[in-house]
Structures are given as structure tokens and as C-alpha cells.
Length: 185
Image (cartoon, rainbow, N blue to C red; front, side, top):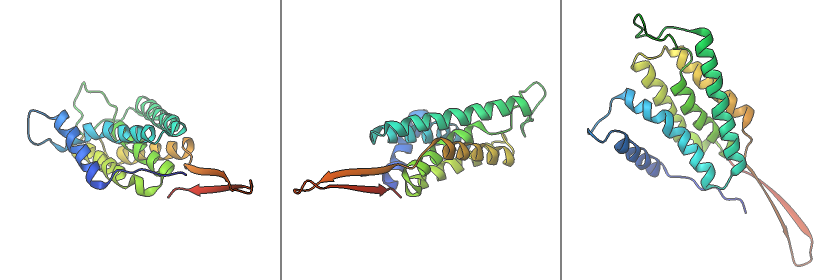
């Protein structure tokens, strides 16, 4: 029968603390900007790892489509729009719109939501929001850069990711076949 494993909130926090220890070994605390820099990779890595642990290889493929299409869209828009960052100084690149960090984090969170249900995406969404906030706080992006980056990834998740449904086929002693359809929430 179809069964979903999930990490508890405590285990997610422990995993993030471990990631923070690895990323920032030389000091006890990290700036909000650095936390956002780590979360842009940690949230999608969690989604990717979750689908692999579930042996959900269709989901893994859908996650890669979601992440790849969102990042491609973001980088094409960065080149086309060429918007100055809030902390722009002459000679810097003008690639503020939309936020790639936020898009990456939201790709993982929206994939988890779409594939495994909202409950599995609560912590990833919170971490993705922190990622977006960190980009505005560090003056790397305007608020609309972050919002559009998140929306792009959410749209890509809804386009490329299907809900994971379980279909169970069984038979009883009379050899009659039963089909049960289970939807995860």
C-alpha cells in the first residue's frame, strides 16, 4: 500500500542546523544573506532527496523539470530585463529581476506541495520565504524581484508536477480483483 514518509519539523531543523554548520564552520552565526545563500540549495536538495527516498522516480524527474524550467525562465528574464539591483554601483551587473535564489528555493517547496501535499511543504515554504526575505534584506533584490521569482517556480511546479496518487491492485480468496485509488494530502 502507498505510504508517505515525512521528516518531522524537529528533523528538518536539525538537518538545516547541520547544513549551516557545514557551510559556516568558522563562526557561530551567519548573516541573513548567508542563510539565504545556503537555503537556495538546501530547499531544492531536500525535495530532490525526498523523492529519491520515496523511490518516486517519476517525481524526481518532475522535480528536475520544475527546477530546470524555472531557472531557465529566470535567467532568460534576467538577461532580457537587465534591471539594476538595489545596491547597484557603476560597473556591477544589472541582473536583479527576477530573483534566482528565491526561484530555486520555491521550486523545491512548490514541488513538495504539488507532489506530496501541502503538509509536506509547510517547512520548505517557510524556508523559501526566508530565502526571499534575505535577498531583499541584503539589498540584492527589490520585493517584486522576489515575488516574481517565487511565482515562476510555483507555476513551473504546477505545470510539470503531478500529484502522487497510489493505485493498489489486490485480489481476495475468491480471485476477485479490487482496485483502490489513494490520494495523498
